[in-house]
Length: 165
Image 1 (cartoon, rainbow, N blue to C red):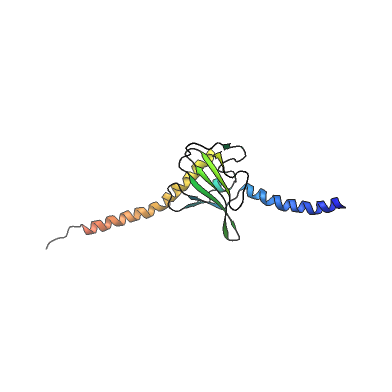
Image 2: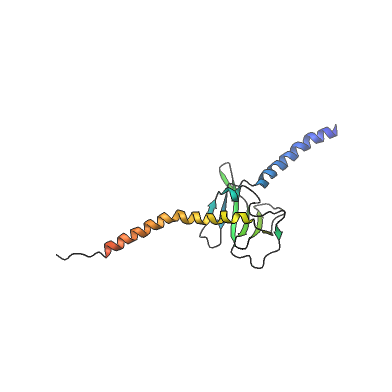
């Protein structure tokens, strides 16, 4: 009798605890926010290469390493998910694309065994990460071109030769 009661209570509790953890461990973040590294403000990306896997930036199981002497220029990456129309920060890390390191700061308002440690970065994400900056530059290019063209017209008008009749 006790065994049946224990199984009846324990199994749903274990399922309730481990299923959400497994879902979060898979990743499926809605977007990431990138700060630092000379960026004014922040950049957002929904690139699946960077958001679909909890281990996209580094394999926290097997890629732990010693703290590098000179990790180089780093970017703070905050990973978010959307829930009922709200954007909720899940965790954050620092990514050093040039030297190939990740420092995992940790889960927001929580902890994990990966927190506060250095890892070798996944080399496959470097191109996706750099493309975020290219897309940002490309989206500003038409505006910059229009502004430059407008300035040329204004200067041409100001310095046009006037006829003296």
